[in-house]
Amino acid sequence: MNAGGTSLVHKEEMAANFAVPGKYIGEKPYGSGHINDTFRVIYEQNRREVHYIHQRINNNIFKKVPELMENIGRVIQHQRRKLSAAGADQLDRRVLTLVPTRTGGIFYQDTKGDYWRTYVFIEGALGIDVVENTAQAFETAKAFGEFQCQLADLPGRLHETIPDFHHTRSRFNVLANAIEEDRFNRAAGVKAEIEFAKTREEMVDVVIDLMKTGELPERVTHNDTKLNNVLIDTATGKGMCVIDLDTVMPGSVLYDFGDMVRTTTNQAVEDERDLSRVEMDINYFRALTKGYLETASGFLTPKERELLPFSGRLITFEIGLRFLTDYLQGDVYFKTHREGQNIDRCRKQFKMVQSMERQAEVMQRIVKEYK
Ligand code: ADP
Ligand code: GN1
Ligand code: MG
Image (cartoon, rainbow, N blue to C red):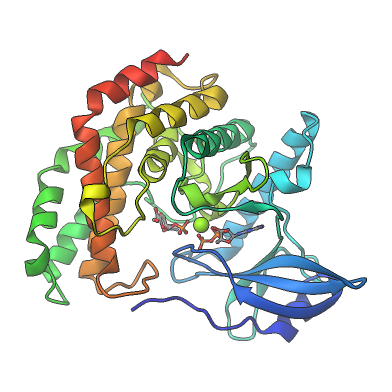
């Protein structure tokens, strides 16, 4: 199983190399991300405990960490400028702040070759794994819409940190290979899921084809807009800060909206086994659409708007394909904490796709209701 690194931070090395004032006190693994190893760290400063995030970047997945960090540096600097120009309050809780290394860099490569970065810890806000109410769907979508808006005029082009990240056709082809190879003899046990994937092949080219012809514009998008990548203020319930910026790069707003639909319209966990609990809840979809259009409607083209409901199906399907592929390849990509977790994740995604297929018309109507 790929449970990721829960090993402790090399504390002396971190404290010596990042320009964090004060004395290192302790740390613990933090959050439930599937990719990086995240630690909440306590430093004592003037007899006060102050928290930071030390994060080991997964460089099996992100092959060019210096480029990735350059992207993040540019993105947060631009966001900060925008927020500041708009007179936003609580600036330090609304955008991530990187703590530099003692030599002025924004990441550190340790003696084992691992890459680390440090963020100021945003207090009083949490990334939640399962949506609890429609207000959270609204806030999440509003925050990601605002994020896209802030970055609409980012100068230059960002590096592609994972090439073809949302190229659904490639994802489909990689799955087809994994089925063919079947290195772990798992394919026979998941025939229904394989069949489900194959019968929906026609979906996979729609967005990439429209991007190729220019009918859908390329924009700066987040590309990993799951619910827990927005920190929600624990006191007010407001969306405070968009985090997890590793995949911010050129893309389509549909990738972002689609992943929000996947993660904010159902109250079951991502690997839910009781599929009777898994339906796309139209009230959550309404809240999400309202929140997103509140911040994004100003720049969306008619085509983007039209495809918002479809993007929910597409991206949920795509992530389902990826979980199925990882299951067949022996659970090497996403962190797992138990046997069969990736296939359960896949089943949940596919059930959501089915549910959205049934509700396609009403989803379309809802998008039209909001200007
Ligand atoms: P992953 O790529 O593994 O998902 P994230 O960057 O999303 O990693 O971080 C994992 C978790 O750590 C987040 O879901 C969030 O709960 C927490 N986190 C990350 N950065 C901060 C921060 N600056 N302040 C507070 N919590 C944070
Ligand atoms: C990963 O890093 P995290 O946990 O926010 C993955 C996303 C998937 C998601 C599924 C870089 O996101 O693409 O949609 O898991 N990130 C990467 O929960 O592959
Ligand atoms: Mg994350």
